[in-house]
Image (cartoon, rainbow, N blue to C red; front, side):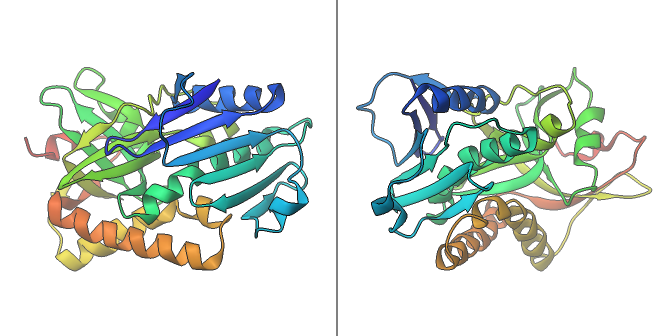
Length: 286
């Protein structure tokens, strides 16, 4: 069985499992990420991620593998720009290894879209106002209050998509977010979130979240917008950057920085000061 993610700008990633061992891991990851299932092998894909249940052949390993991760559990080889091969020898995975495995399977194939400048990883909470469909991203460092803000938004007024990570995709001057799994929820034994990764969410406002004594939306300078947006877009890049060569890592960073510049020119980027008890959501303009 094949797993497919089609981004709103048409970029397509297809995951394939070659045996029962890797198919089990792929099904588990696909369920968490919300990928579609397909049987059509003729569908074009920009990136193919192929899972093998054995060690990488010597001739492939010689083509500068991206990385060897988790000891002997996982090796990643990218022969060209369109294929990433994951080698998962049969083994008893520890819980922490499974978290890293799901994360790498999900994030590494996205590097192609990021390098093209069409997408960026956002460390932030993604929500939609039910009254008008306005999509809002609340970005911030760990501890800034993203998950707390996510929980505090009234269910009857807000649709909640994810509380930690999204893939933000540019379509002309419009932006759409694809929710990505929050890996810490599994490591902490928390209940899962329905990510529906194939359903893009239109984004109309982007906020830099900060804790304060007063709930307030704050206009900031273009320089502060650029600094804050690029910082939060670069934060999650450590996941693919840890498994690719240096020159490709630099290319991803440059593309992400350029993406941040386009983002702040096309949609409002503001600072949002929030308290633990006030109705900060009333600060969002209609």
